[in-house]
Figure (cartoon, helix red, strand yellow):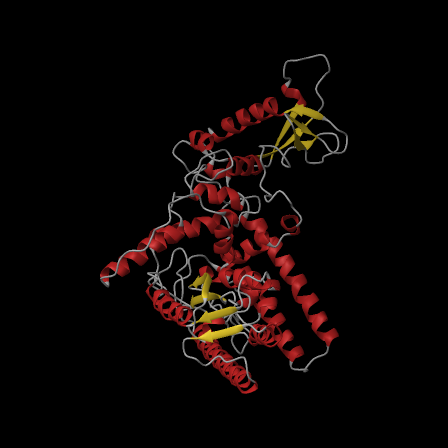
Length: 510
């Protein structure tokens, strides 16, 4: 009486196939298929995970997961792999296969012949080998983590993918550095363009809400792939595929804005503390010295401290966290800028009108904007324009940045003292509250000094009126706010023509 042949699955995996040529996988396949043929088994399927690690339990192995599902569905009763650590490096996963061997008579065969799950001694050996392999992985991870932390404490550039604007050795890429500097400058403005608008500007798109000062750059991933192929060509290796160019994503821009390296801070991310890292902000991962002060990197910062922290403040603002539309940028010239003449409340755009949320005054957006722009153009055309502007107090801004850093250092030191049981919890809270109150006041002063100074080159242009007309919406709003306050009043019913007397424009003493 003939019996059905054993159906066997072949699992092939390599952690990192740098060449992605499949040769390493092919060598595993040849040896595994030879075992299938020698045992007279029927091949049920191949499951291949190329450049997939089995060490990190959070990483997905699609082929492995599919193989588990197929085994549970009864599609095979034997597994052939090159070695036990090709199948798994996770003791928990190994125990699942041991259970399957004991309870359902799964056959697990390796090319090395070391995986015998049919006997107690075989299972013991497999468990010992898996534990030893896991221990070596953990020791290697610990060595690597200590090396990365030591490198960060020395202020040396981290290894890995280079960020926009920097080479691997920490030197600047001039054109990219200018682009990164402009990204920070734009977003540091309290009512500046959104992250999506900045991404659109880098992608070469145009529009009323997209800043025009940004250069059009290819996607950074494409640039990195081209550079990688240049290195491969120098080594006599074949090129790898280069992704097509496309629009920049908001997540890429956000990663740039969050990265403390641009301000010259050395950063270390503990990959092992995954859950903690999900809750930590970028500035919490800045490496601190024994004095609680941030460690400075041995590279030139692209932006100053004040700009970087101002960007973090805008990113952390509650209105961004609760905003489900993904942008806090204004979309209309006078929304939130013009005021109701009766309630003195900022009006909001509502369809084709500006509307007061208190008394429901409603005015045509187009008519109001045309009139305000006409007044601003006239003001920009006057010869005393530049003389009327007060110079920015840069020394005070620098002083404020240093004071904020000192207050932040005191919070760090208090936290460290609390962790070491030097102070009690109520002492930590008292110090935090006191220092954060000082930081809040200094931050408000810094913003008041800087928020009106970024005028997009309009005021000192050869032709300020033409520069104003070419400026984006953000700059136009900023200049209007610099020169005047606009109050809107109700229009007389029954009249269709615009009455300028229903719009009061109050100069701001310039």
